[in-house]
Length: 87
Ligand SMILES: [Zn+2]
Image (cartoon, rainbow, N blue to C red; front, side, top):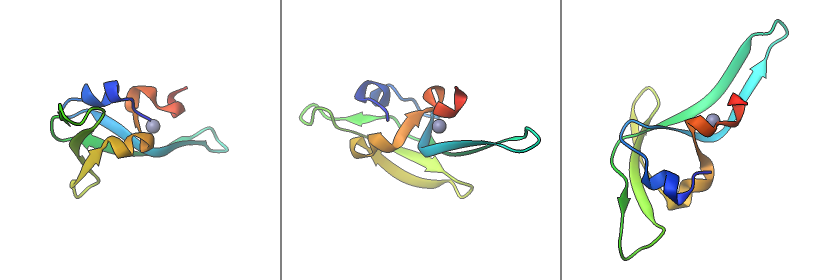
């Protein structure tokens, strides 16, 4: 998950991972990773009157689909630098 602090410090072009990232090691040692990525495509919007809330736009996939991410989605996301498969 991402914290409020992490979210409000995101910049245009930053990468987020969505859901659960999976790393599989094959019988001959080949490593396959399954990672779904969001690229931040706007600045992060916050409101003085709505503390703890934020919103930003992301793009993902080959079609560069655009979607809006809010504080409600924090549980689904993590920073690329904090990805559990990097351990
Ligand atoms: Zn990840």
